[in-house]
Length: 374
Image (cartoon, rainbow, N blue to C red; front, side, top):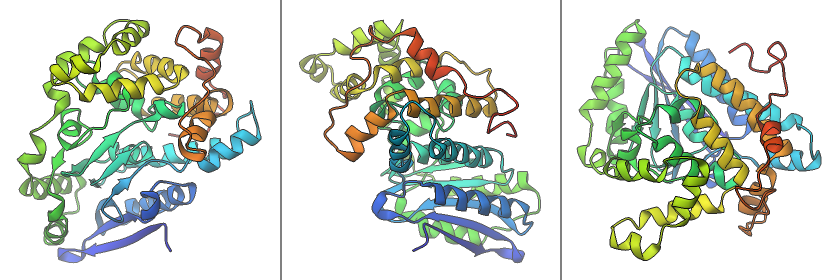
């Protein structure tokens, strides 16, 4: 079975749309290194082919576009080399970020059909696309706090551009967004009923595509707008509760921890905020090292270039594998599934500056950085 299925959709005037379908339905289309390499090679080829006017990414099955990265191999390699950067970890994250950056910079229109689960590495693919479609079943999140990581795959770039302190909230709590939420924070820009997928594909085949990428960008937008569904777009909890989120995320990390810890289920129920209970619980179950990394990430602002974000994240990610809580988090959540991680630090107050410096210091100088050609 091919892990990624590549097809071309014939259009008017010998133009074609390249379609890449993630095809590991049982694993919710989670990305492994083979899939990353297949996607990168094909997207680079399509970029150079004049007849390819647009690229579409979607996922097999009805449950997920992509539920994240397949982190088991990275974890096993890292556990076998404690305290060292495992080559497998460096290779996976390097090539994953190269793929994400390629999508951001492809030039031709890129559409992601973000139906079902879109998490972690799946969001890395989606965030870089020019046309990001959500449906009524979209469930979008960056839940890395639960595995001792942080929102990578460009999260340092896109989380900082969200309204108010929403980016920090999403990073710390792993909150599951619906389609309307994703539109609100600009992780999506089109909402379409999932039942209109085939009619949409038919409509794309009938477009009179041009040789100019900017024109084709507009043509794709016109088609997607024609299928727009306001029912999906009009129920953003994040938008409705923006002031409350900003209030909870105000002040220092210690202030935020205190504020979230104090949330009482009965009180939340009375205020119609029961959803915040799950956000609180996910945060409190997360890694204290991750809390600190996410706070540092959110202090970067919007000045850092996209390529520099990926270069910084690569250092942080391999360091999380070698020195942080990543391996223990994956063990507890995905391997042994006991959901009882033994984090290096039992509380926020226990985290040392030395530990944070170790995670945030790049293993490479500028010349030797694996992503120095981005």
